[in-house]
Image (cartoon, rainbow, N blue to C red):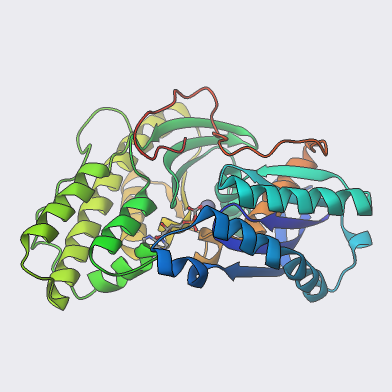
Length: 356
Ligand code: KG4
Ligand code: ZN
């Protein structure tokens, strides 16, 4: 089966053609072509993503990007078995651009349309890259989300924990802004932290030792702000030390929650794999901490390659393949969803910036 995937839910316009062999015990797939166009330069002057600018940029670039990706794959629309697009959650203007384009292609080429949950794209990437079997424990850490999920199967998720305020990537981005490191903040903080002293500022580890697996980052963010405001001016070394101290606190806070989730997961499920996904999974310090936790618990640790951790269309195409293999396609009147939790039975959390 060959599928075209489209991703437009945030600040990356992306298309990919993925070929899959879903018949065996472990599904297999490979990207025949993929293109990711970052809008970072468009949003940089504003210090964050501007939804209206994002939607217009997706509209400007998506059709050309699809033509290029199909040409790179060396196939025509008649060779496709389906068209998949991110149908939520995300910035709704961009999601609508991707969904409408996918529906139009599906209609014109008489192909099935698959509406993919962006989070399911992140969640299932480890099956494409490493053939991970269900069930597995997933830490999903991105600019909009911070969740721990037991992934039982395609479309079947149990949320073990989520953030009660900011997402992890959001915390990176906001602290980077305070430190004058620009946008996106995660990579900038990681670079600055490399030459910093992680012990100089004893920032709090929010939620550490508390019951459950929920996260919180707003107190940590505020603690950084108070230190920044108290310093007369920020030297290069101050910025490096602040970045290192913040990153260490955040990683330790996440690690505490993951350790608890590992205990809960291994007690309830046969699966023995810990997977990390989402943009913040690119962070080396976080990956190291997660590898440690997995080693100590006798779990296999899987982190997809960096390019498949940040937003891309390969993951959307792959999730589409997984769904179509199970006969799950969607009607052309499917409505894009700005909010679309993976586990609809989990109680909503009401904090500032909570996305699911
Ligand atoms: O998954 P993603 O590309 O987009 C969303 O769906 O949100 O994640 C983007 C987030 C941004 O907040 C960015 O700062 C963060 O991932 N990020 C990182 C790193 N690379 C990207 N955070 C920490 N360390 C990194 N190396
Ligand atoms: Zn994402």
